[in-house]
Image 1 (spheres, rainbow, N blue to C red):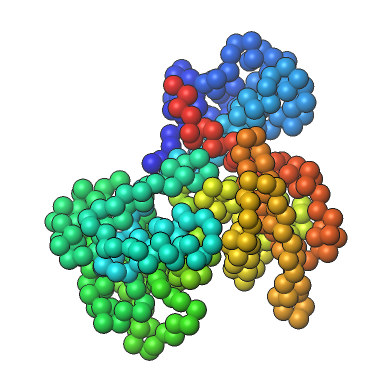
Image 2: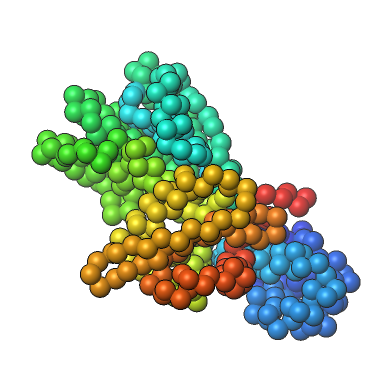
Length: 408
């Protein structure tokens, strides 16, 4: 669902203009002639001016024009410039595939579940096999993610393979799921994977693949046989699928550690529906301002991590685990909350984990950070935290409004 930023944000007369930087700001769809004259008085004539000069003119602009409108113009202008370099989408169709009983439905439920693990397991115990195609939707930062779960029983698999255009066309990402504990069906799982690769190649569907080694419970021990089978799967996808990176597209998941599920989907959503490079850079700037070794901004509704930066890979894993553990202990999510916990990472590094709800406009988010700075942990300044996030990430938070609102 690639978003055509020009179609979304520009008036008809300006949609075909090649040089976005030189487009007059009145070319933005919701700027009037009077507002354009006021912007020019403040030194802002073009899209490039809006991006480069808004800080100097901001206090003057918001005295006459509502702040949310000015913010949306700034965000829109930045998005127009970024769109020349990066793909921008407003949502995604994600297909979950695998043979029956690998845990596709449990992944979907764990992704959307809020509350204690005991309640999650009660739902999972009552599951029955998925019959055919099961569609569901999750909203992530105002953007719709459509999950298409393909029931894995043989009768349904045959239908998917005989009529692949009905199930795979329009897909943005395909997640293939393997039950690591069902050794008797490894070969069947490999064969089905190969069949899906074959039909998607025949349809010329060049999309990213993700490989989930599911039911990787904490006490599960990988056998030599399993390691060989899994390596052959990885090698086959790597050789036959154009958009597959073994280093970043393989996940070990289990509903017993919910952070593995939400961490995997957070990674996928950031790569699919957001402006990946720009939001990473902005997150890094926030982390540096806050003296944080890890910074993450999470969607309040879905718990998906929208923006993050980590100095080290192990700190990212620690933060995700700490986040989801803390979330399940907060009794009333409607009230403001703060959690601080200290972790010893190694003999040379102690980290303070801070969890705090933050608000921008009418929307709530959850901030998580790791910092070695004891002073920050003891005297967290809510206003200054929100100011820093607002300064560097507000453009991408504002993107939600553009992604959702049709602006016809």
